[in-house]
Image 1: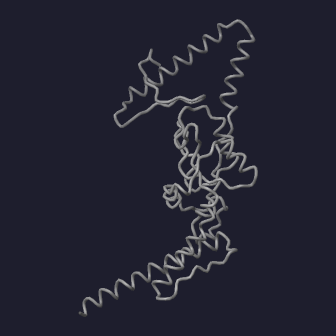
Image 2: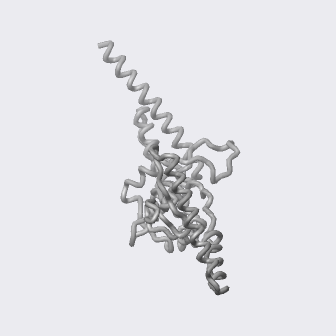
Image 3: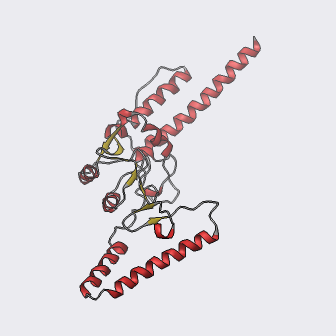
Length: 252
């Protein structure tokens, strides 16, 4: 591209990324289009001058591999139950498209005791053994530059296959020699512990004795709904307490 004075931002096995901005003119876009056409024409003429049938067949196979050899983009696999939003039943959405609390997952990942780093082979092994593996950060191959995994999302086999097949030098969220950041299994199970803390907070605000009594066999949906109810109750009680304090201060 130096011959045409065009700077390439990023490349992968079958993509080329050019950057434009608000100052890009129509003539600059036309120059890019013309340059790409000239390059394609030059390559085509070079192929036509190749007399050996074997070389042409090999070229055609390489082109076909670039166009069809890569796995399709993975569909969104869904949020892990620990991060699904409460009160979404009855929306008619498929389970994997139910909204999730990405914000909570993102900030939970700041607690080092909740996360670990795994390579793709280890993630594949765990999923094959039936263990859930949940992303704790954004995993973004560049190019193209969109997230394949977001915080709180369950990692699927389709995602692993896609990431292994990619030929890109830059993957945001991947640490060389360590892997990608995921939640530990015990951290995902700690959701019931959050409910216990909320129960104690409600009890303290209501003047009752704190309680840690949480049913041992709660489903994830039930726990999420319980958390939502407790958080709403806390907000209501804290608001009432604030008004009481203000009223007492005014009376004095």
